[in-house]
Image (cartoon, rainbow, N blue to C red):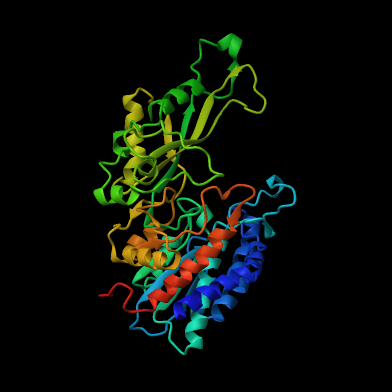
Amino acid sequence: MSRHAAIADAEAYFDNKTFHADLARRVAIPTESQNPERRDALQIYLDDELTPALEAMGFTCTVYPNPKAGGPLLIASRIEDATLPTVLSYGHGDVIRGVDAQWNAGLSPWRLIEDGDKLYGRGTADNKGQHSINLGAFKSVLAIRRSQQQGLGFNLKLLIETGEEMGSPGLNDFCLAHKDALEADVFISSDGPRLSPERPTIFLGSRGALNFDLTVELREGAHHSGNWGGLLADPGIILNHAIASITDARGMIQVPEWRPADIPANVRAALADCDPSGGDDAPTIDLDWGEPGLSPAERVFGWSSFAVLAMKVGNPEFPVNAIAGKAWARCQLRFVVGTNPNAIVPALQQHLAREGFTNVSVTATRETEMNATRLDPDSPWVKFAVASIIKTTGKKPAILPNLGGSLPNEVFAETLGLPTVWIPHSYSACSQHAPNEHLLGPIAREGLQIMAGLFWDLGEASLRPAIC
């Protein structure tokens, strides 16, 4: 009955619109980490919004400057008993640029607007809405435990950064410097999308991501295509052929070092009942694209993928009859565990040289890349989370060995050495990083139920995994 009461309290938090009010305040703070003019908003979010909310729940909070001059970071700790298990959770308070003018009429990135089942606003899905769900559920569990004069049964630490949308600069250095303060037994957090809107999901890591530029620079300036066509090499044609050599015509990767050796058997087993279609608002999967012989789930969660993010040759806005001197493309490799991130660029350079494209330069575009991580699907913490979600919802959650996208999970899995369990509260058609970003109300409400049940179960020694 106590567990039921905690879940009911979390449901009421959503149903009486208190969740909406909390999220509205947070969305209204324009925490665009990519915009230097918003640096004050990042500090305000941690100092004036999250710190008071956390202190009211018994957390001790400290806001720190970023060691690499990015946005500040917050560590909040609620230690009930040092002998109890400790959970570390995470969120990011920064958001992608608002692009205000591109939102539909009546919507704004900095105002929470409810329209049917959708809660619109920048950060509703990524990530203010998700860590607000977790904080709301925790508050409900804490209230019921206190009303029954019980202890919480575990310790909770929370790390909030404000630079994730810039690649989390300084996060790893910060966690190394504060490793003792962040010491825990397990990492449980929320970001990214569910496999489908109606199915609770657990993912255990993320694919890595490396962005890089391909450039063909043959000469200064452009030259008339009538006078020089057929005499001057065209950098656009060269670059397009170079890119075409990286995959075949259906997207199968041709760079040997980028191809995983295999997909582990327990990863295949976990993905066997997973359909990544994403729901009604998602695009239709191209079944003939990517690595042949793999299911759609295996292609996005168990394999690597190459994408061309942008290309430019000449003046696309105002084309002229001239052969350009330079062509450029920004590309990306999403990669899984087993791929050496330090070998990605050298392997591509060797591949292009073998194919005869010695005049194509390859340059990584970020100081740091997000590396691939994956917790064993057979981990006791995975089984604990699955059992808790089934108990709360009656639904078997999808178990994704890793997210198709990328998160700084290596910081938690490798630098801090924790088993990592992510429980997302969004869906893939949420317009994350685009105009009209939104959180689905039914997912948010079910997320509150799930996390209240999970936090309750963490306080029950008979349910959680034994901590050695």
